Amino acid sequence: MRRYELIFILRSNLGEEEIKKVVDYSQKIITDEGGSIIELNRWGMKKLAYPIKKELQGYYVFCDYAGTPAAVSEIERRFRIDDAVLKYLTIKIADSINGEEIAVAISTVKEHNEAARKAAEEEAAATAEAETADPQEEETAEAEEQPQAAPAAEDAE
Image (cartoon, rainbow, N blue to C red; front, top):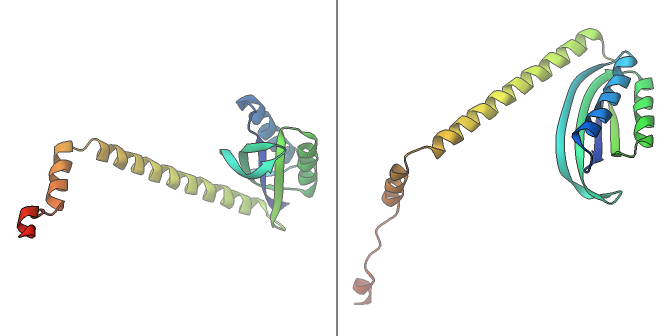
């Protein structure tokens, strides 16, 4: 088994059900061939760097998985046929990966996602706390920071 990264871009006018269908059949191909998904991340709608098939936006999906070359061939074959897929790119990350390495990679991804979630929650809490601060305290602080201007009449003499 080998480790791959797959990024594909779907048409922007697809509904959530159609996006889910494409993601599900790509996952099914990987698992049917004996592979396993390490990470699946939906990046969402983004502006394309250049128009692709007259589309200016696309829905990005990232998948890190362990699989066989047959799975890669089947996924790419289906993506070429499917009109919903604008672009795709598969990159081989490692020539071989065993079950233990897959488990370590999955746990590393879970830890990373948990840390990112905690950081986002803390940032949101800090932002909410700053927004609910007393406005009179902010005005007083701003007044203390601004230097007192000398009257213009004294400078003219």
